[in-house]
Length: 187
Image (cartoon, rainbow, N blue to C red; front, side):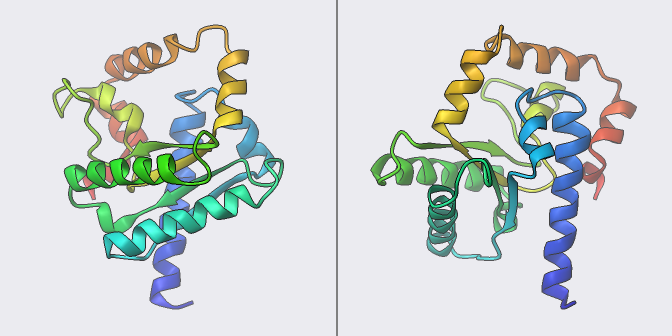
């Protein structure tokens, strides 16, 4: 296996572990377990460095979702290591992806959720454990199907309570517990 392939495999393994041990095990997203069990979550690593090339890769990932039955491919986690260093640069890129969606043939069909190792909610201190609800080992563009989001919202008894529950859960955890769940924070 080449160094590049080994690096990508390691990134996929870290994101998979985060998905299973944090997102699903801590129930930060009550909708992730089913597609994970069904094998319909794709984790792809973008090795592009240039913002335009990254945007083209994101478009290609959206095309893959659009062209694949949701039963086979429900959602895609596009990992973008090139945006690891700066949360501000990552956040700016998320805005560009949202603009792409608005002007694409998939307007209203897909949306993007964002995860980054340094994620910080507006108005929160960087040290606030609540930020961990959107922190991941690598920068991730979570490409979701609007129909799936609508179905999840309709089926959940307290959709608006999920963020508050997550923030409370994370704020109640000890520093040791957070470090155990997010070991990549110390790399």
